[in-house]
Each structure stands twice: as C-alpha cells, then as structure tokens.
Length: 82
Image (cartoon, rainbow, N blue to C red; front, side, top):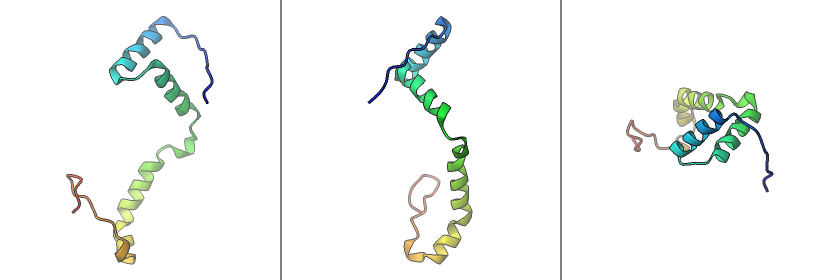
C-alpha cells in the first residue's frame, strides 16, 4: 500500500520534472519516488555492484580451476558464450 505525500516545488522545478518524465516515458510521481528511494538507500551499498564485478573478474580463473564442473559459460565481447 502506498501513502500520499504532498510537497511544494517551485514552478520551474515542476516544469523540469514534467519535461524529464515525458522524455523518459514515465511520470513526475515516479521520478520523485525514485529520488526518495535514493535518498534513503544505505550508503554502504554505493559501488557494491562494481566491487563485486571486479572481484569476480579478478578471481574467475581461480574459481573455475577449483570448481571446474560448476564453471559458467564465459561471454565474449558480443555477450555470446565463448
């Protein structure tokens, strides 16, 4: 269930929000909701995906060697199985 929240923004900001929402094919409400989610996101998670990707890339060969039967298919530069 969602709760309504009323905020006041300057007309210029509202116009910018409307223009961006139209450009992205979404709504002003969706833009503001996403901004609110970002505002309360745990800062410790910032960059976590990039750190995990780097760890996997740096250690993939070692994992594949240790668990050869479980090694996933690798993708080439065109994102196809190598």
